[in-house]
Structure formats: structure tokens, C-alpha cells
Image (cartoon, rainbow, N blue to C red):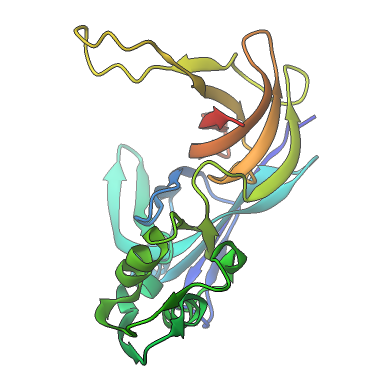
Length: 279
């Protein structure tokens, strides 16, 4: 199982003709969290032609990264925008290196000026902000349907910042994963992967507890509900997703809070390192 690696990149102007790259040496690192800051990544493509590299490196280009195993599952792992690109020589190779951020264009461009009369429903405000961001969303049902602003509501600024303020009023937050906006209750699973990870199905390391200690003088005990582990590169292990882990150190459901994907379509790293909490 899971022997033949596959990485595919499509990059170019959003809505326009892009370059599909599959047959060159590719490395990537993608960092995903539940924070509201965009997920980030670094992608290296070896020996891309100078002409193609110059077109790929354009800031604002849209990029889709797919990865997985040809004998199992290949899925989109990252959607984002090129922040910076450069082509440089490394010994006998020319490497095109791209710094990317997820949905950066949508987040940066979502400036709004909104004003509503008294007794406006919170869901109306939230939906307007989501529309301004321009991404599909799930989870608005987590907002109390009867919640209102008796004195009305008005604000000017970035839609993501305003959305944060509004959601915090209801003990909610949001995260953007794979160009979809999730309104979430902290600590709750928003997607079930169906994955059962053990030594036979892709669990590479035994889960280890993550300590909250900040130094030797911190006498707090380790936070036994937080765990870290490595697994085969499953793109569905995104923050907010749930998976079951079976091992001698932990046995149960974990909510993924952070995932670092490392990929190489030759012989290097090809795994995801996750941090999660027991649920």
C-alpha cells in the first residue's frame, strides 16, 4: 500500500491558463493551523525552464498542489497564491522556489463598509462578511439563529477582521482550509476523515503527549489531551478534521489542530506531522 508517490502543481493566473507540472523533481512544505492567519507553504521545482519559471514566479498567481499515492488516494492538499518566487542555481540544478499563502488574495481584498439598522440578525451580518471574502463556507448554523444587534451594526475595514469580532461574541471563530471558510466552535470536529491510523494503515510514529511547559521552572504537568504524531501523507488530515488513532500510547479520536505536510516525489520526506487534541 501507498508506495508510488505523486505530486502535481497547477500554477497561473486565477481563472486563466496555468502550467501543470508533474514530471519534474518537486519538494514542498505546507503548514496548516486553525489560526485565522493564512496557511503557508514553500514549493521547490527543479530544472523548470527559465521562460516557464519567470511566468510561474509572478506574485498573485493561483496555485493548486495535489499529492498522494498513485495506488491509493491523490487529492488537493493546498490552494493558494504565490507571494514570492525566484529561480536560483544550486550546484548543477536550477531551482524555482515559491512562497505561497492560502487565499491571500481573497483575505487581503475583502475591504468592506457595512451598516445595518437596529435589530439586525447576526447571521445577516456574518453572511455579508463571508460574501465579501468570497469563499464558500460551512458552519453558519453554529451562530444562534435568534441573535440580534438591538442597536444596529456598522463597521469599516477588512472583512476577516470584522468577522472575527462578530464571531467572538458567540464564542466562535473561523478558519480557512482548502479555500473554504469554516465557522467553528473551538474544540469541535468539523470534518470526519474516516481514517483509522495504526501501524498497518499509515501511522509512522507513536503519538506523544505535548507539554504546555514553558521552561524548567514551570511546574505544570504535561497536557495529556494534546498529542503529536507522524503519518503517511494523507491530504485530508487538515486542522478541524477528526481521525481515529490506534496505538500503544494513545487509542481514540483526535481533532487535528496543526498539520505540517512535507513532500518529495523522489526519495525524501513524504509525510504529515500532526498535533491534535483528544475528543
